[in-house]
Structures are given as structure tokens and as C-alpha cells.
Image: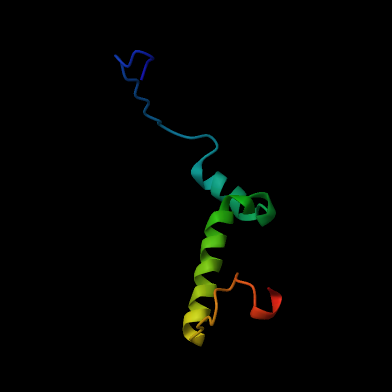
Length: 74
């Protein structure tokens, strides 16, 4: 949209350069460390879900909240 939002501009992409195939081939050979940070949020979510699944399967039941001090620490 333009600034007063009276006109909309539409762009239709006919081709990309380099081609999608070339970009994909480049991505496949790129070392993971170059793009790993893009997946941090997904990795953290999967790790939390994995830990929760372990707790459920083990039947973990806290006797006190995990962040509460023990009676002998007060």
C-alpha cells in the first residue's frame, strides 16, 4: 500500500534467480551451524515437550514445587 493507503501495489514474480533447484542444492550442502539459530525456538519447544513426556511416563509427582526451598534450607 502507498502511505495514504489509497493504492495497492501487486507484484507477480515470474522466476527467481538463482533457481529454486540451485538454492535447494546450496542449502543441502551448507553446514548446519550457518542456519541453526533459525530453529532455536522450535528446538526449545521440542526439548520441553520431550522432558514433559519423560516426566509423565515416569509418573513424576513433586512433593513440593521444584523451585521451593527444602525444609532444611530455610
